[in-house]
Amino acid sequence: MKLKKILGALSLVTLFSGAMMADNDFDVYGQISAVDSINKTITLASPGGQLVIQVLPHTKIKGDDCGAFGNDIYGTFKDLTIGKFIKAEVVHYGAYPPAQNPGTQSPNTTNNTHYTAKEIEWECGRKAY
Image 1 (cartoon, rainbow, N blue to C red):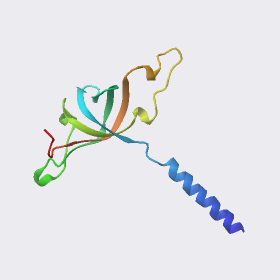
Image 2: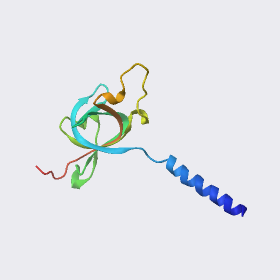
Image 3: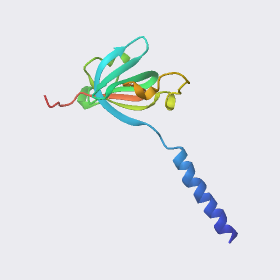
Image 4: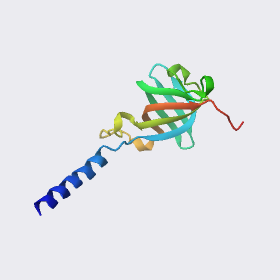
């Protein structure tokens, strides 16, 4: 009986620890509409507004199937140019939604959303046009 309680407790701990360690990143797709080389951000245009993505020194930037024999190539911030279509794996800026100070404008009232990029990728393969 005691063994069943211990095994039950261990299974609950395992179940909840897996949920706590879940990755809260997601992919966004779009065309780069602005590049800020001073602040190291790129902006994606979308129907709902602008999506600002912070590029960190350790953000993986790569071109899919861009190298010799279709190999991936790794790029730098300079490779992120206006007009390029990308897929970015992002998290909320600072991994949490922005804090709101009393008396300031709500972050949800603007059309700008700020994220941090873990990985940015573009494709060099075939295009529709």
